[in-house]
Image (tube, rainbow over all chains, first blue to last red; front, side, top):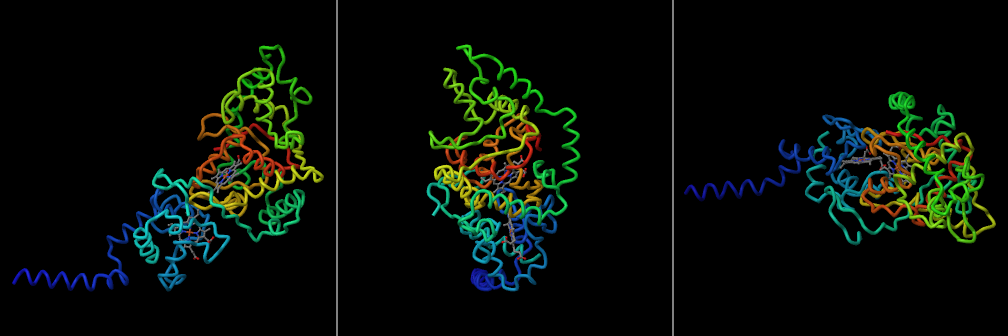
Length: 117
Length: 290
């Protein structure tokens, strides 16, 4: 009986989990995304962008704030990070996805964090 | 896409330079028929419009043209400039005779004093660009002496002394328009400057033209204009003086692209283009940079 309960719970959680992740990433996931954004050997976004909570930011690119206003659609934000040159051929931002600077999973975590700003 | 790759510092170094030429919509890049002088005037105009408060000659001071705080520290450093020893060493090395009794003075116009403004130049017979550093080694070679490393050390010191004797002279690099090989060398150097490379996919212009005056973390970016006036440079980060091409290599590595060898044809063409852009500027080397 117990077994069946845990199993059904598991099924329940796994089936709703993706929906949850899309709408509201967990605090833990956001922390991981933030670490990717701030770490020099990962996103190093602070080299160019002012981001709340980050230190020693550059101003090579625009400050990253009010991101849901700038990018209502999460997919557009992901596209900007994956390869900024699609939107702007003369971009000065590195193509994190196209040049595999970050993995797809890292980009997803990062996008959730940036979208939350 | 990327050819052979190798992990370094969490990034992959892209071995093959990505053949992604970019043709930025900036006016001077756009007109295909423009010659070196049109390019130079367009760059001067671009910076003058973008930084109306910066007097032209100031661009020869690199990032200090834009950064007040860094500038103050830099001026203080000039009280006891750390490149002074290099000038003294360089003079001693320059004046010491070779084993055959000849010296550097025999290899250069005017005995090598006050000549830096004429380098690099295009040697029509050899069909290639000659930089001052290359000619220092060619001089050694023709006198039966061993070659010196190009980036730091004795050769940089000799270059520092020669730069010092040329202070105040006006850079006067020539790209003879009636010499297609010279024009081609210039154009190749220019193309290198505008081409994206490395995993981070930057061209030289991404940082020094499009982003001059902005900050990459704590690094204020200098302008292309005036980049060639003050070499070699004592850099706090290096803890010694280094040549312009050492800096080229470092900027390549920053974007995770493989640096070229100092005095390779590519770097010489790049130096030819970049120095031409500084024509009309007064030489003010050697210098210090953070």
